[in-house]
Image 1 (cartoon, rainbow over the protein chains, first blue to last red):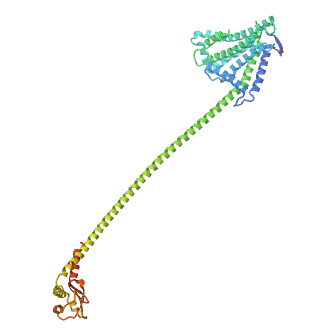
Image 2: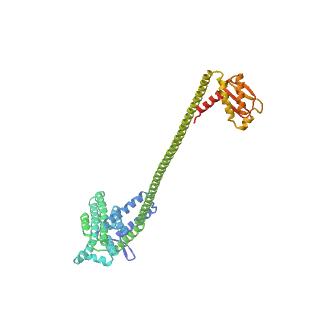
Length: 236
Length: 244
C-alpha cells in the first residue's frame, strides 16, 4: 500500500491527471444521481416507504440547520445536506473492497473545506452586506481583527485535518491489520470506521452550519468559537 | 507531503456538481412535496375549521330558532290564557246576568203569583162576603126584599138622562126582574113610582130571578137600572177586589 499522502494517477484526460479519489467521487456522484432520479420520480402526497425515508432525511437536515442557525433552512439545505451525504457516502465507501474513501485524501477534504470557506463568506456578505460582514472581523474590538482573520483560516484548516486524520487513520489501521493478521480480523475495526465515518460526516456538516450561521447571523458577536471547541472534543 | 492541485480542483468541481445534483433532484422535490402535503393538510384543516364554524353557526341558528319557538309558544300560550280568561269572564258575566235576569223573572213571577193568589183570595173573600151577606139577607122579611127597593129604583130611573128616560117603555113592556114574584100591592107601588118619575105609565113584564137576593132590576132597550143586592154585592166585591 502506498502512502496515503501521495496520490497515484490512474489515467489522464488531456493534461489532467485523474486520481483514485476523483474516480470514486465520480462513482458516488453517479450512484447518488441515479438513486435520486429513481427515488424522486414518483413523489406523492401520500408517501411510500422510500419517500418517507427521504422526507425524514430532508426534514432532519432542515431541522438541524434551523436549530443551529435559527433561520429558514431553505438556502443552506442543498449545501449542508450535500456535504453530509457526500462525506457519509465517501467514508462508507471504504466498505467496498478495493475502494479507498475519497475523504482519506487530503485534496477531497480540502475541497470540501474550501467550499465551506467560500460559502461562509458568500452567505455572510449576502446576509449582512460587504461592509457589515467585514465589520464582524472587528468584533468585539478592532484589536481582534488579526485573530479573527487567523481564525477563519485555522478553523477551515481544522475541518480539513479532522476529517482527513480520522478517515485516513482508519484506512491506515485497517491496512496494517490486514497485512499483519489476515482476512477477517479487521472487520471490527471496519465497523468502528462505519461509526467514525457517520460521526465525522455529522460533525463536518454541523460545523459548516455553525460557521455559515455565525457569518450570516444577526448577532454582532460571532458564536463560532464555543461550538467549534465542543466539536473538537467530540472528534479528536 | 504534497498537494495534488488537479485533484483538489477536480474534487471541488465534483462536490459543487454533487451539490447542484442533490439540490436539484433530491432536496428541492422532496421539500416541495413536503410543503405540498403541509399545504393540503392546512387546507383540510381550514376546511374542517370552516365546517366546524358552519356547524356551530347552524347549531346557534337552531338554538335561536328553538328559543324563538319557545318564545312564540309562550306568547301563544299567554294569548290563549288571556283569551280563555276573557271568555271565562264574558261567560261568567253572561251567566251572572242571565242568572240575575232569571232571578228577577222568578221574583217577578213569584210576586205575580203572590198577587194573583192574593187577588184570588180576595175574590174568594168577596164572594164569601157576598154569600154571607146573601144568607144574612135571607132573614129579612119578604116585604122588605121588594118594597125597600122601589124608591131606590125610581130614583135611579130619575137619575137617567132625559133621552134614556123617554125611551123607557116606548117599545113595549119593560122587563123587570125581581127577587121573587111581586104581590099586587108591590106591583102597584112600583107602577105608581115609575109613573111618577117618568111622567107616564109604563107596562111591566115582571120576571123572577132569585139570584138578585133582594131588590129589582129594570131592563130597558138602552140601559139596565139596578137596585138589588146582587148588583150591590157585586159592586162592593169589585171595590174590595180592586187591587190598586
